[in-house]
Image: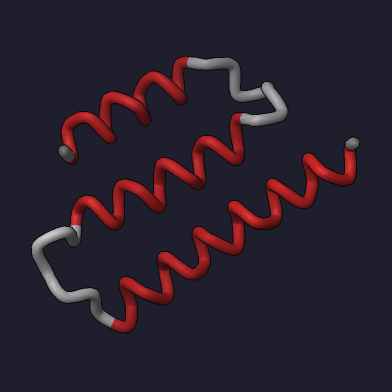
Length: 69
């Protein structure tokens, strides 16, 4: 499953980074990657902190897109 996420990340990176949705896609794939990476393990407090930070970045991007309305 991690290989598929990495393929999606490479595809996203090949898409024009200037596209307004790119940051949202980037942070979403980063979060997905962390979840898949830890799928068979317990999440540490550090893992959860990193995931929370990524979720905040996703929310920021959604708000930025919403404000462009």
